[in-house]
Length: 428
Image (cartoon, rainbow, N blue to C red; front, top):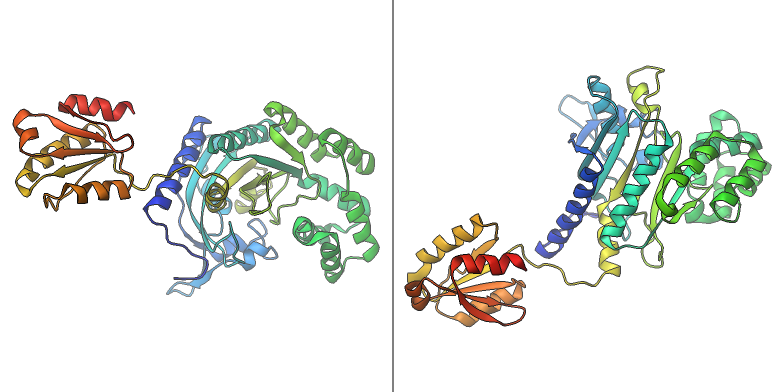
């Protein structure tokens, strides 16, 4: 098996599908429609200054390949860039356009709990709305997702205009600001000393580095932080956008304004978000992240016209690992609701008829096709996959047109008609 990839057996796959279904249901409840884009994309789409940028860590982690025509390709590393290409190629789309996409992406990066080289992302994006009200809606959707999943999270928010304002304030030249922002994004991971050293290695003046880090160090709640930064850098547009976004989200939803949050991608222009577990002692990876990228689509169209756009990506791997760590509820081991055990091969034909009737009633049904008359073996099989219901069929059941239905959790057993059996299974 390739390093950084994983197999998933039925129990794990069922749980992952459950998580994706929750996400899909919530996405659609907020008005997002599905799309699908290719796994393979042109290299220059991602490397351009309107994509993730040649200098970003993510670009260095792309899986690169050539087709038979010697064209440079990549395996997609995320969905935002392909989505922007899709919008640029489909000008007839009515705005605002809200979409979601769920699928695998690939990065040749470091491996740890919550981070793999093939992983599933679940993204939502909106094009055509510039007001921070839509940013607030996305954060409300995010809070709804994690409430439904039962995970206790905090939402970190910042704004690229704030970071640029800080860098302008301390005198960092405009052409050096992106490199500085990429380093600032690592503040949580390598600390102030590590960021300082990295910036000095990039040729940033030591006094300027010290000033940047000092300006980023603020304390207090969201309102106090915003006011403290206003006093330092003036009435920055990004501060106003963060203030409005947080103010529109119900009860704040554990939103934490984090001035050093950068998101290490070149394309962000406004609010940026990262979502973490409150308890990060074991799993320190972001569960979701995203932000506003108003210049990407216009860049692909070679137009100066802004296309307001923003989105957020939910990382299935990190969410799955978090649920493994912090939720110990019993998982389904099989999709089967009902297991039919014939007490001999002569009853198989009748079992097939009933199985199809149960399936038509919406009940996932399997049959013990061995039909070896050993009831114990069939019951042990049903138990091993935690199948909740078993029907036993022999001569008496067929003669009386009754079904012996056993509840495998309680051990209760009774003889019922087909209609009664369907009602009993589906009501629970």
